[in-house]
Image (cartoon, rainbow, N blue to C red; front, side, top):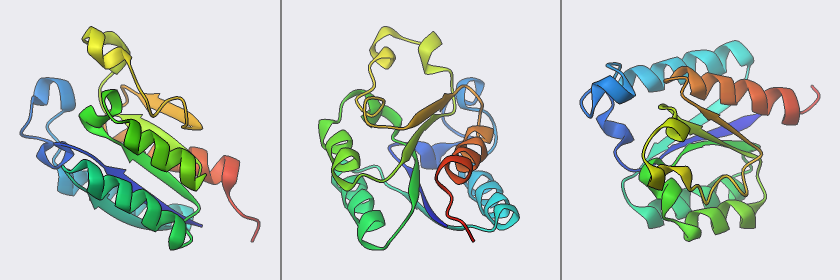
Length: 147
């Protein structure tokens, strides 16, 4: 099984940006945990991050054309603004788990809107960076291929 781990705007600033909300672990730690967990699960991962909406759409399409089996996706603030990203996920039809480090449902009103949620197969919020490994587990459990 091959998974794309996709991160949107400002996720590269983990550990720096609002550590009281997003934690003190940095982006390199996130990537290390994801790769270690992928090895434990016996899956391949490709990790991508961009602050640019179009690059994220391109990555979603690339996941499809490169034969990925699912996407773990934290779109950052694009969650609340991007129909293009939601359309790309819907368009490629890959099972996608929406991940948020913070509990967005307990934050500002504008964070209650998620365009991605309507096309994602599952959402994990408020689990810190552990949400990424939980999302990987979900995809493997529900969409993993028989060996």
